[in-house]
Image 1 (cartoon, one colour):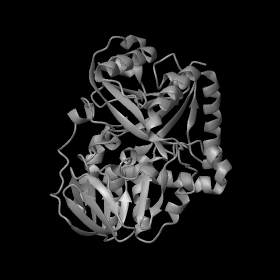
Image 2 (spheres, one colour):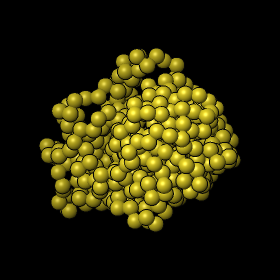
Image 3 (spheres, helix red, strand yellow):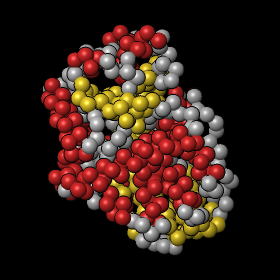
Image 4 (spheres, helix red, strand yellow):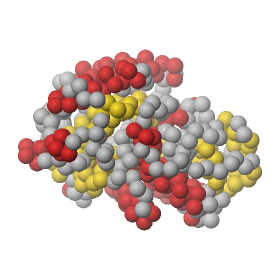
Length: 422
């Protein structure tokens, strides 16, 4: 994400996110990226007796881990039937099980460490037309039958119990998914990492990784020598590893927060207090915060709007879904980028030698980043079975010069908006 603009999460964060003074020296593993992927990898490594440091160019949680919509969503972000057709039913089920463990790990960590991050159960995918509603009904049947995962298709009165809008034609409800305050969760995970002995060097931008193992990681402040490197920079990988960055597009995603709503209004909008995302290609997603603000986000694209334009655009999108909120005061507006792969599934693997990577969560990062970090740490420790399994997900490179991505995405988004109207 680009520099945050008036983030609600920054305004309601718990603590400053402590870090250590940079120490040039030798570690077993250098983890690059101070979001949830890197933090979870570092915690797992520390638990295995591996000496690790974490390098973050900005502050901990500066990127999507601290600025996203906060949706805690089960699954891999990709249509599971599509994945089963390409890899087989057994592999698809094994991959889905890995993703579910990520969900269990997140909930267990919040409970066992008492992380105050406003975790709420419930997530709804809302169909923007009848064709999408039929697709969601089929998906509910498939997830229950093939993966034994208890999602429910909702329409009519059942749908109205979750969202007070007339623009939807059905929905897929998952009570095991939900939403939380992403920055406070990330800061809580960072505290766990430091308590486990991980050295966290924030404000330490990595310039270059040298060698195939052992490595030297060159930073502005000095060098780290290490045996393994974990690349966990997600959408901010371009300058460090341009070839690897070709496997995703940094898509703009932006959020506004309304003024606090009275209890009656909040309950009329989202009576079930679930997080909601619609099925449009240029989607809306939204939820209520702990202080009853509507946090409303959407994909805007690489052509990031100015803050003034952002408020105007998002205000019209809110009014389309909830006409009663037309003209409502917007107290916060912020945004940045998420890494979206061609498959919409995460991209993990080995780059070269002892350099491993994980990125491309396509909007499912609160859960997938945690399990991805754990899988990378397992591979460092000699067990790469789950890494090799996740690496089988088809994620071909995007064969386009980076300088053409912005105009290409602008054209693509315009086309998607036309398709969303049908």
